[in-house]
Amino acid sequence: MDLNQICKDKKKKTVQQSMLLCCKLYISETRNNSALESIERAARLNPETVIVNKFQDGVYNRVRFTLVSYVAHDSTGSPIYSPLQQTVLAMVGAAYEAINLELHSGAHPRLGVVDHICFHPLARASLDEAAWLAKLVAADIGNRLQGTFCLITTHRPTGEWVREYQSAHIRIY
Image (cartoon, rainbow, N blue to C red; front, side):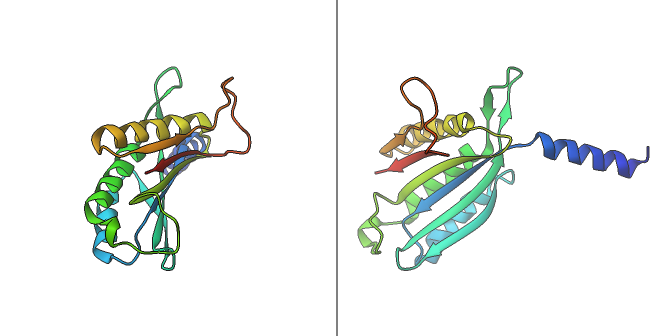
């Protein structure tokens, strides 16, 4: 077997085994370019997280970043690490520092500088992994940034997933 075929097979196997999570981060700002640049710089500190989309709504004065990265597991299959955790925390911290909500205006009702964060499973990842990451990020926001939040669960009291929800959400106040 030649080296090119080995590389192709290895790449194919890696892609098939990928477990990816997506984060949609909504920030109450789109008109202040220096604030947005600061937030994007924070995202680029970790090359293992990719901004796959940035949607700016000028009327709402709100931006949505769509981020993707992998989730790593221990030998038992439990999630133990995702670069998204630190990337989202860095972006939220940058938003808190750069945006003065008292000067903000927009058509969308907002709950805070960072209005909404949701995590979705991609590839072979599960909703459980998305919820695991949402809980970690919510705890980090509360503990490190002193942010107030509401973690919207996607589980019934029995532990079953509510089928209407395909993501785990954090509402920031």
